[in-house]
Image 1 (tube, rainbow, N blue to C red):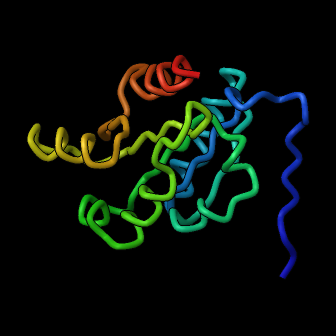
Image 2 (cartoon, rainbow, N blue to C red):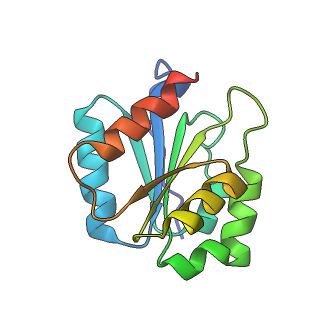
Length: 139
């Protein structure tokens, strides 16, 4: 099995790198297209648990995770990834979860536990790009 080559220019700053992890190929492709059109360098992954080993994780400014369903939010795999990507410094990537609709209580609890931004499906207007931009503002 060959390993993918990550051709990210060295001049790309941390604030410009976005990692997207989703099993949904159409969503990954459309998010990659949208974010690249905004000037971000985007890498996509097919599995959320692949995030921890990705060579650009330490350079990424934003991590977008799309769990398969809302039950996955409480899975051991998701908890491990979220624990490993918790803000440890100002240079840690901001995490955005894309989820199916949640009730307000679950939404708040998830955001508080995982220290992340939540964007609900369907993705309307500029809500995701606004969340990405807001994530980079802390850098």
